Image 1: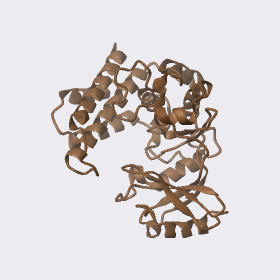
Image 2: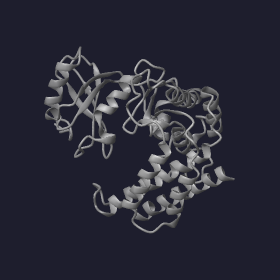
Image 3: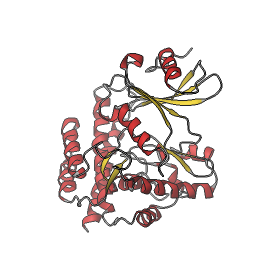
Image 4: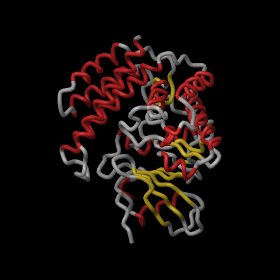
Length: 347
């Protein structure tokens, strides 16, 4: 029998049977996703009821992005709103059960289209793909217009000075993780700070909103927004910039600079221009500064990419089979993209 690292199946199964209504033991578990991010497991009981269990990465203390209480809080607040999320069922903050806090949610029937092959398998229909693209924007727009006080999130995080706080944090990360001198990155840190527009629209910021972090059904309807580990309150246009940067188009010269190439590269899901127009129409927000947010997000990802490079070079990752030249170039490419969009914003 395969042992699932990070999950005490007997203890978690017993806890779930005691705290989640309707479970008929025993439970069978399998890994859905895991690695350097939070771990996600599928659970099925003896009468085929399906659940999902989520906990932080092995070896983490549970703070920050790995705080299961924060994730449980956001999906609990959004469940029943216009933003589709899995139904939260139970939260365990007792580390003695599984060595780390975890929460349980209902399983959603849908697919994660995180690459072209997944889209070909689960959403081959062109009309469905067009609808999925529209849904990505519509749901994000609805999320950004949620009244955070009305759903009980008003005290969850600081709201103002989002960009200033983010820039300060990522400048510190760059100083800690840089493996070589890259003058472009130092110049970019100054530019994103000096050019930062005033925060005009404040609300829920997902932090990692892209097509690979949602579930879509066979008709193209977005049925669940996933991976809330980076959510906060702040300048919602940061999400728009991040989504656009990951909305690869057919003529992009080098679409895979950080993550797996999104299926939007086929062109069937709509263009970035149509996404921007639809977002502005649905929210009523002024998106004229979108190039700044794209530049900011490319710079942010360059900082994160340098941190990944450093961990590989320090043998902190599980594998040594790494193209270090590619890791070097990835940071340079992201910095160049940041410069391009900041130039466009200034010009």
